[in-house]
Image 1 (cartoon, helix red, strand yellow):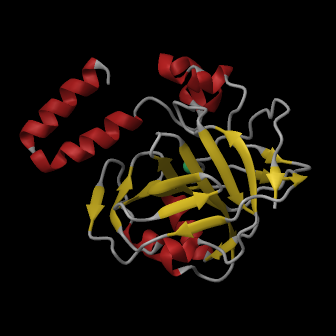
Image 2: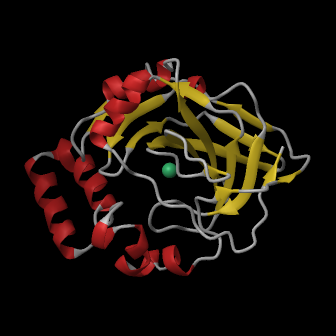
Length: 251
Ligand SMILES: [Zn+2]
């Protein structure tokens, strides 16, 4: 937090204690964007802790071309309907989760922290972009991250995504509680085949401690809901990064 943001956070908290969460959301996400002088090509230069955005060798997302077929451990996603709040953080719409939803894959187990959306998709499949992508962000007890991505296509409405669209705060920095109607399970396709590779956060600080699982099955969402999301975030996707000879496995 720089001094200006710190002082603003203090001032906001004093004037309106309930706004403190809003100030935190703003301060956490200040300073970078998806275009221009603070866009993806400059993320590594914006802050010392984000240098790996430029210098890293296992950055995400990727254009997945020629993945290696492999027998991979089954992915067990056990999501409870326990969202706590929906946040417009200035870069996306994010739904924060109460503890109790888990991802288990091989020897690894994680708790679901939050899920959020990108438009268009961040991952490409053999050069092909998709209308949107949802990221389910999980953390292990050891602190490593496991993200499950689902590519979203245009078609039949998805009740969970429609609920997100109906409840999403229009203005950045707003946190809205009382979002129990959003059920993350509904955004998961039936198939559990997945692409797997070692990557990073796709936003600053681009930390390279993320085990990526991108489901091979897609989910459809309503065109009208995509349009509504685009009204807030027309483009919030980092471009595909160099693979540096990383293997992507697929089951
Ligand atoms: Zn994401």
